[in-house]
Length: 254
Image (cartoon, helix red, strand yellow):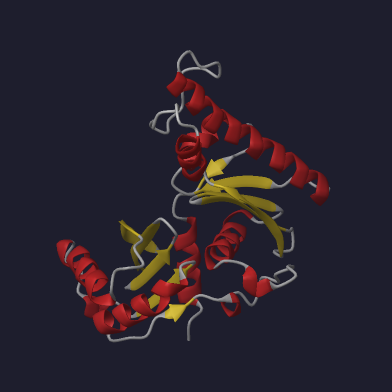
């Protein structure tokens, strides 16, 4: 079995693969104050709940954008499985040239998405990840990571709106019945949902102009299902794209 972990700013996603099949997937909240012992208990309980023997895990791969938790989970995995985990960095992608001013700046999650996306769809390709931040990653026809875009995530935008505008209430982040809101909640939902869909479509158009060829456009991340139905450019959602990237890294481990 292969154990893969994606540490994001809001959630930590854990998956167990057998061969190429994802058997289990779990999400837990990211908390940099927790110790490796606290996380170990959580992970042990998840594995036990599904009857997974940690001794059957032969390889583990860790992708992280929260550096304070890197050592916590490396220690956890060693104690849990008896084996060292591979921490994803740019050296894990020898076949994907990174055309950035400083390639080491690119987050592990973006490189994982790019490699898995290119394997599945080829290029040119735009991958939009709706997470804590909304990111766009651009991959060329040759499989080069060309760069991308980082913007504020939907939930962060909504939180900032309610925090700074005294009279605006806290609301559920969901699609309103129409673009023209008839009450405050629907007006706010429209601004976030349809506003972000407009931003996505506009950004895709601008990236396409720079590429000078039409890319495929796919999305991932927890909020992708909210934006894809009202976007004119997103073709497909791949929920476990980052985990597929982690699996690819594990398959290349010696």
